[in-house]
Image (cartoon, one colour):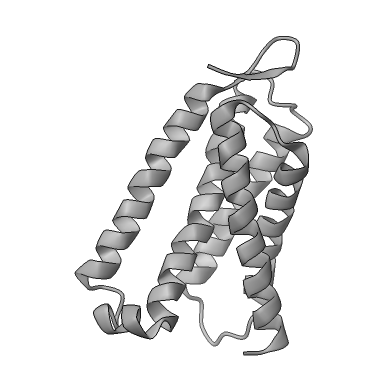
Length: 163
């Protein structure tokens, strides 16, 4: 593993861990400003460093990186310059959690590629164990995103509260 790969993996894990904290905040009506900054920064850094890793052709991981960066750009605009006002509240939740989902999707894919016990179950990542795992992750993120959109409210005073 190269130094750049190690840095990319560490940043990715920080993004995923902080993403869980931010998700908890959304579900409980808290902005958790420091954690949000860490999540957004590390998620952007994850995608950017992914493009710095050596590659010989355009791959699905590059598509995921592009989609993640687009979602994160929307999340940053919704959270900071737009201050979660009006529709920006749910746009922020949806875009931030979409980027979080994409990072978690890659984590599962990497686990199936690198962990020997998982690789045996799905060597080409087209086998049922892999597909079922990714489907469950997607379903959970959809349910959690809907719950977060419903629970994360911004009052006219700018205060956040859970419903």
